[in-house]
Image 1 (cartoon, rainbow, N blue to C red):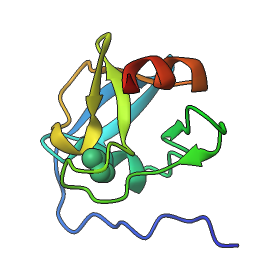
Image 2: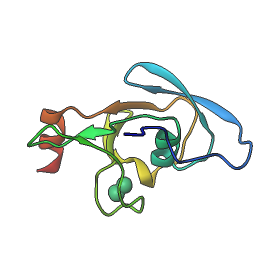
Image 3: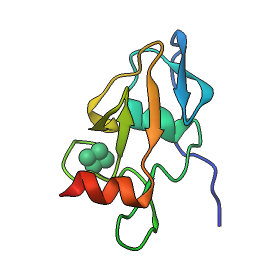
Amino acid sequence: MKTDSRFLETEAAARVSVQLDGQTLSLPEGANLAAALLAAGVQPLRHNPVSGAPRMPYCLMGACFECLVQVDGVSLRACTLQVEEGLSIVRLRPREAEHDAA
Ligand code: FES
């Protein structure tokens, strides 16, 4: 199964540093956060709270919650955010995602 990202950057955007689970990533400033994480090859973005199955962004318009991550300590949909310098992103583990879905 191919796992390379199909998201390609078409213009040169300034890059900024963000933290993902404690690791530094360089992402295009102002890009949609979910799309930028997909383009960077980040997978999975979270896990299903019941089964623990890996999940990825699906709708990219704020409807499905498949892109739920913690940003600076708050659970948010990555597809509703823009990349900014210094974001601290944590992927939700199964128990944390279950708590946020309630
Ligand atoms: S991808 Fe569906 S809400 Fe973000």
